[in-house]
Length: 226
Image (tube, rainbow, N blue to C red; front, side, top):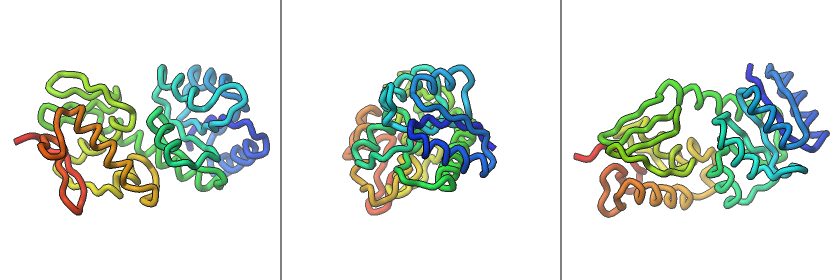
């Protein structure tokens, strides 16, 4: 059972989600506006927040910016906006998952359980080291030879995922599924762009790699420099 706060202004959908999640064993509280939801989340953090983007008092994107300034509580965005650029933007802002309406309570329950498994795994592997690269998962901090790396949320998630599997070749399909939580049909371009940005911040290029090595036709792996 998880403690879930649902921030959704559509009364019918809100009631259906609460009813469905309760039937599936969760402890659910629902609010119809963003600011009360933010205050509730900060005062007594739940296990996960389900957040609509189209709220009457504050846009969900701004809500994410505010909560990420004070908390790392897992947030699943639940919205009708299905544009790929919007999905990437919202995940970069701090969402842990993104689900497009319409969806069932069972599907949302599966997303909640998946997010909580990742959080539990992150806490278990809180400090990751590969060569001079140190990734603190719980603090969401990364350092290279003692120097802090200024990473976006998705860049950090991508680095942490690879750092937890040093030397293992990970496919782009796997990265898109496990880091972006998106189907392969969303395209590999998103993965390649973020890998390029991450390489730049690690002080390397695809032509002259140090940590991030492309295995042609297979994927990418993170290894310590020789």
